Length: 295
Image 1 (cartoon, one colour):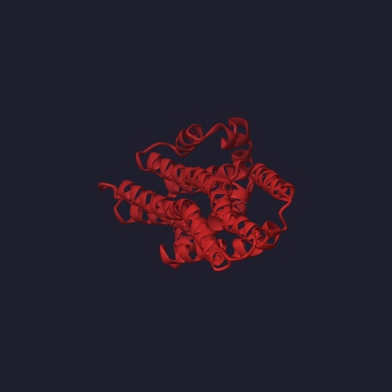
Image 2: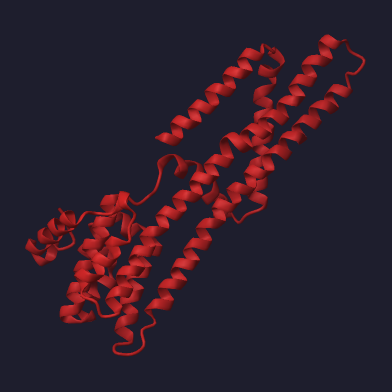
């Protein structure tokens, strides 16, 4: 909401300034210049990136407006769900949760946490880690390298889109200059006309430079910065999964693993001890087929 308010403020100020300039030529040229610079910017985004990265970078505009994917309630659901899995695995061995990790789509632990189920990276980190534990009981666990590799890969992939958006912001001033040069070329072809004709043409040409700089530093640059912050914030969810699983793999009790992960969360997304106790007590009171649910 804050980002939307900021964007509206910036556009109102700039549009107001253009309106007060009192030049009909600028108003007439604005749609053309925007289409020219915007189209060229979209083209450079496609040229310099894979389709997946370009799509993710374009989606960064929406992400910057919506905010982080994972909320406080999602972290609470993750902690309680992982506690359920670890508690059952500790009591009955990995075989006790075999159905959950082999068929997550039919497991109450995951089906009642739809955002987790839909996130391929987070889901893969969980189910693959437990599979690795089952394949190597009592031996040196391969879980830690797997989790680290998953985090590194996810961070690298997500930051490529952030980098693409930052590159786009750096490109826009140059594209604005290109638009201005095209306007000057058009003006030079009418150099024999009166100042009343040439003046508006020069004003329209300079509009390209203005728009390139404005879009770079007033719109795309700030959005890229916020997009990068959100990517880092959402990576915290994957880091929490790693903390939970590593703590359990090192022999800690499920509740200890949950508390270690909870304590590392930023305050604004960290469930309180009272909230966790209430959620875990509620789950314990449910019949086994409903254990994936939280209060």
